Amino acid sequence: MDTRRTPRSADRSADRSADRSVSRSGGLHRRTRSGARTAAGLLATAVLLVSACSSGSSTTSATAAAQEAALVALPRSTPAALTPYYDQKPAWRGCGVSGFECATIKAPLDYARPAAGDVRLAVTRKKATGPGKRLGSLLVNPGGPGGSAIGYVQAYAGIGYPAEVRARYDMVAVDPRGVARSEPVRCLDGPGMDTYTQTDNTPDDVKETDGLVRAYRTFAEGCGADSPRLLRHVSTVEAARDMDIVRAALGDRKLNYVGASYGTFLGATYAGLFPDRAGRLVLDGAMDPSLPARRLNLEQTAGFETAFRSFARDCVRHSDCPLGGAGTSPGQVGENLKAFFEKLDARPATTGAPDGRRLTESLATTGVIAAMYDEGAWQQLREALRSAMKENDGSGLLVLSDGYYERDADGGYSNLMFANSAVNCLDLPPAFDTPDEVRRALPTFEKASPVFGEGLAWASLNCAYWPVQATGEPHRIEAKGAAPIVVVGTTRDPATPYRWAQALAGQLSSARLLTHEGDGHTAYGRGSSCIDRTINAYLLRGTPPTDGKRCS
Image (cartoon, rainbow, N blue to C red):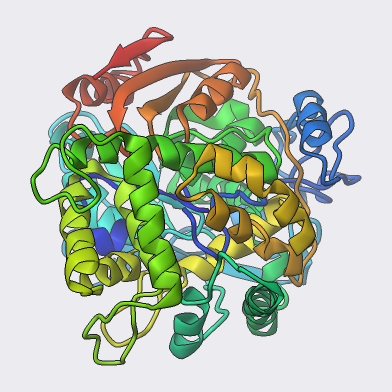
């Protein structure tokens, strides 16, 4: 699953960024994420893990090992081989978006061998508007992995963040390597992705299981054929090291940063590698880097169930709810939705789409999950479900699914899902290695979510067929010596469960946990004046909240 930032006021085409969710292409699931290989020498690796790390399939042993493993800071001095990268001066130019300018910054493709070639990173900024003393650059990342930070800042953050923040900071974004404008990973063409997204991901028999495995293999082979060298170098650790080069190129002594969803893992990794250069960091919708892929997927599955139950309680209060009337329990609402999915599995609904696509079980499930990210989408979901269940019109759910996958009206897809898998499958060993492992785990996933558990368990298999071996392992991030870091968690967040924010705050030595009691994915800029005031005070005055502060 992936994690994505979904501010209520943001342009949806820009913020289909985690965090993260159930996509067959990999999900949050940092699914496989987190960085690090062992190495010798200053340039040999992005990160060292101390103590043992297990890459086995045992969730318990891998979790236990991660409790001992920790990200170790890189040396403060810049290695000579990297000096040319750190000494770059961006050549800013107009980029067709009012108020913004763009540039390209180079980073080494392989930090272990800087002379082996470069990767070109797209950067954009909108200068501080004033009044007030400029505080430097504020980098933002909306999540994913795979979400375009440039699209996010140009469509939302650079114009929608609080005016006082935009007055004092240059608003800056860099698309991570392999994402959007920064040498994007590609895997399938539009028709290929249409086939992939409609593949049955709740197989009932051997034939359907084989079909799902073929879909995963085809997707992975497409990625490997398109980007054979880059695919080995799109880890979160490498992206975090790229951010330090961008920081230096911008002329900032420290990195100020707001990361949402998967962006919290990226920001925490930066703090772990460069604690002395971590400025004011906000990590909103936090992830727990110490968990192995299977545990991450299982806990995110439970997070979507929590969010769905909130939706269910809201739905039955409305006379047009197709899943039950007043007094219907969330459990029964879930059973009714599951029955609808099973009906679609046997006979997809019409949609009226010009290309003839019908609403399959997999597309409908994705559409429902897409609406779990933001309670502001619940009415749209309710209406879409009513049309599909009562009138056999699946067009509304198809719109939600297409938005999740960033599919445009012409049938083209952004590279979000390609980059999502590329990063996830490099950052952590696979959640499952075989279909048999998935089958054995189904009862656990279905217990976590009777509605979504089966599909999310099978979605966790995709990295088993990835053409590049994972380089990362689960680990703690402590960032000893860093300035105060604000970690934000929402109590009923579907994509990044609240427990993850508690866990990350418990790992980071200088963390202050800020809690939003509410629904939806992430908290900043989503309607809580308490959250916004607290974060603004930290960004503008450097005043972190009291650890444990709660807002509604």
